[in-house]
Image 1 (cartoon, one colour):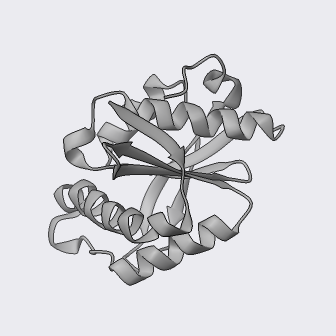
Image 2: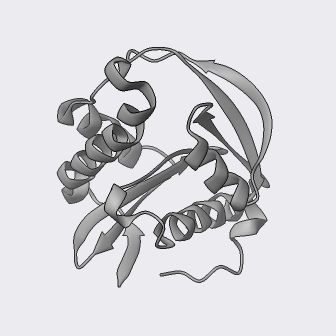
Length: 164
């Protein structure tokens, strides 16, 4: 059985490892030789800053081991990662719902997120959660620029979902 909880500073090393591994497992098949492998140090810095901010950083755990993470701030869900062996078990959906509830509780009626246009699996996931495309953008990143779809989803969709 998995658990979803708020992250703590002590979780940062494990969060960074999951982020680096899940990011690589997602983007290497999509970009091949052009894929960029995140470093543990840059990932740790990102999640340290996230914990210091106004948003919500969640971790998904299996028997105490962190297997996924999700982050929301302002009106954005800017991260939702799971180790590949934990996908398609409802964990991502549960984390997404909890992030939506968090934003809804802050008075945000619609959350936004972006997805690389070639990531068909993520696009299908977010559409199944009620998200709809509202635009496109170029995501400027040190790893290389990508074309992204911008999605919006009503935060009320997270209401009434069970909290693991």
